[in-house]
Amino acid sequence: MSARLKLTFPTEVIVCYSSSFSKVVAPGLRVGFMIANKKIIEHGTLLKQFTDVHTNILAQMIVYEYYKNYDIKKHIAEVSAFYAKKSEYMCKLIREKLPKAIKCIEPDGGMFVWCTDTSGKINIACHILAMRKALAF
Image (cartoon, rainbow, N blue to C red):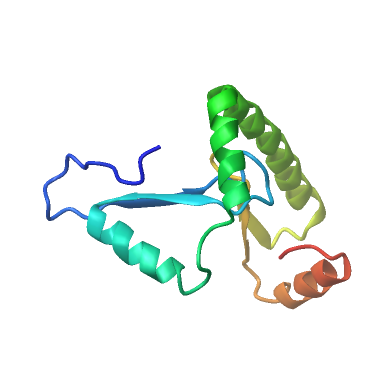
């Protein structure tokens, strides 16, 4: 993959897309990418170097070999179906088990659920319960 993408937009339009391979290849894999114009890529590279000198080379090689040797489109379809089932089940449990004051927006293709406490009273109790169960909240 090329680190730079020649954009077909007018020069005054700024487009930057960044993502990672952690949900596609493996959850612990910390390799990401950015598609943007040259100036944004250069600034992004400098900003990233404040957090680490470079991305783990072994992780980059794993991503490269995976894309080279496997049908990534098929894999993404399988992973998406897996996460969709988990997400649907989690949303079902939220509707059934949590108080009605908890409203959730079900993800459209993602794996995170956005919940809102419409009463303003339940939030702390949910945080405490999540901490006791070692859940990300």
